[in-house]
Image 1 (tube, rainbow, N blue to C red):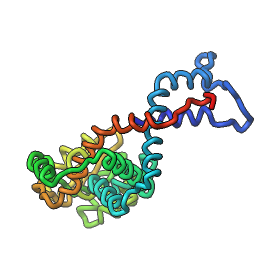
Image 2: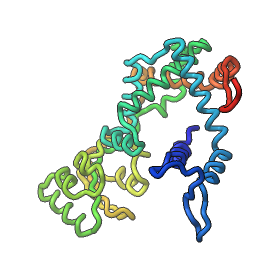
Image 3: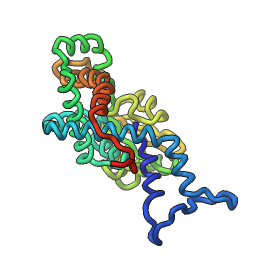
Image 4: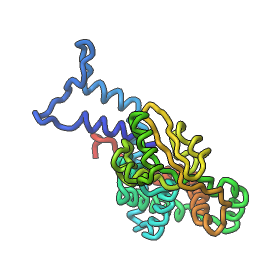
Length: 288
């Protein structure tokens, strides 16, 4: 598994200083005793280095093999996968917020999806992996309940600091003021500024614990305030959506992808070992 924290720390520690090279600079002092760059890097390497390096070698071997065979993901498959991921978040604003928090963008995510699909195609082709239609139908019948669309609420939200602010906003909404306009003007939550506090439809598991149970117990049109360490949450339920049973035609493509991914995951270690046996992998400093 990738360790982005390790990567960031190593980059920070090994980046050249504006004052020139400092081979073993002090990173921090604790009661006058320094912890040096070399100590941190040595600890990181012992703990994460070998596994991280192996992972990077495996990824590079897979990309080299895909490139040699001119294997690329189809744009339509990338778009379909992207839309499938986006759909899981319910509302586009929540999806965009999650991308921002992860330090990525739709364009970068699509590139990552394309890369992964190409590698999947490589392994599936090399190992002759495929999923039959009857296997997809069998999996659908076995997991029909979990594939159903869950109950959801269309929720609006404003976050404020004080009870006085919350009461004032609720009174104004009841008097006819637009919830979205008040959210844009006064909410401390990012969604207030981005989309007038409108979360769209959300299902269980997508909301903070202190909000979820109350939101799902509310009636359409009802407003409530919830106290939390972040402040007071003002909730308004616009409408509620009952669970919908899964329809095979709507989920068969995603289900087929999932079954194929399971086969690829099982076949991947042996395939990587084959690539390693054919590859020339030399540690740095080894003679040619």
